[in-house]
Amino acid sequence: PGGRMSTTRFGPNDTSANTGAQYLSAFSPEAAALLEETTVDRVPDPVKRSTHFTLRPDGDYSHWLPRGGTNAAVKRFLHGGEPDRIVFESRLQRVAVDPTSSGPARRFVPLFDSGGHGCSAYDVVILAMPPKDIAKFFNDDRADAQSQADLHRRTNRGRSKAPLPPGHVSVCLQPDVLAKLRAPSFVGRYSLALWFEAPAFADQVAAAWAGRQGDQPHPVLDMVSAQEGGNVVVAQSTVDLWRRLNDSRGGGRAPAKASIVNALEDLAGSKMPSPQHAKLLNWRTSQASKVLAGGGVVTAEGGRLVFTGDWCFESSFEGCNLAAQQAAAAAINALLSSPNSTAEHDADGGGGGGACA
Image (cartoon, rainbow, N blue to C red; front, side):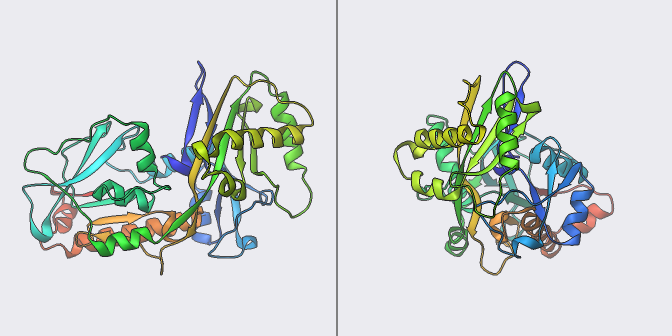
C-alpha cells in the first residue's frame, strides 16, 4: 500500500516512519466493526486540524490509531480477504488485452516493470488509485500537476515502459470515462519525517502538541506524531501552507521544510538537534476536495475495469470502505453479466478467470 498508507525506513535497523494518514476515521457501525476486528486502538478526537469531513459533520466520527501505522492495518485487511496471491513492491505499468479473448469477453493482463506477475489474464481488474493517475496510466494523457504517475515518470526518466507481449494491445479509455476521472480534485500537505538518536526533542514536541488548547488549527501544522519510542517525529503541514508553496520552485519543498522545523522548535521551546535523517514528502493527494458526483465508482470495458478510491466518496476509512464495497459490487455484476462468465463454473470448483485488485 502506498500514498496515505505509506511508510518509509532509515538506518541499519530499518526504523520506520508512518508518513501518510495517522488515524482511521469512521461514523457507521459497519465501518467501526471492521476497525474493531483489526489491531487498532480507539482514540479521542485528534487535535483540531485544518480539514473537515464531507459525508457527515466532524463530531459524528470516531477515530482509531493503528498499531504499526495505517500501512499495517491495510495489510491485515488484505490478508484477511484470503486472496490467492498478494504482491508488494511491484510497479504496474499498463493493462493489456489478452489476444486470445475478444468482444465483451475480453480479458486483461496487468504488466509490471518490477515485482508482480506478468501475463496472467483476468476477467475483472480493480484499480484503487488517484483518478488522474488512471488517465495517465491507460492513455498516457496530458500531464497533470497532481498526478503521482507523472511525478514518477519524471523521477524515473529513462525507464522504459513494460513492453507489450506479442499479440497484446493496450487499453484506451473512452472520452466519457476520462471525463469522470478528471472531475475529482485533491488538496495536499507536506509530510516531514525526522529520525533522531535520542527521543528528548520528540517527547517535548509531542507533549506540547497534545497540550494545545482551543479550537483553532495551528497555522503551520496539522499533525505531529512521535513514533518508534520517540526516535522518529512525523509532522504534517496544513493545507493552507501547501497551497501557498506548492506552485513555487521545486514544489516549495525547501520553504515548507523550514516552516515545519520552525513550528516544531516553537512547540518544543528549544532548537531542534540535527537529525540523523530527514525526508520531506509533497503529498499532493492528501485529501479529496471534490469527489465523484453521485458516489459510486467509475467503470470501463463493459464494467470489467473498475476504478475506485477515496475520491469516490471521502478521504476517510468510511469513504474508502464505501468505495471498496461499490467496487466489489461492480466486479461481481460484471462477472455475472459476461456472456462467457466463469463465475458459475468457478463456484463449482472449476478453473478460469478471476478478479485482480
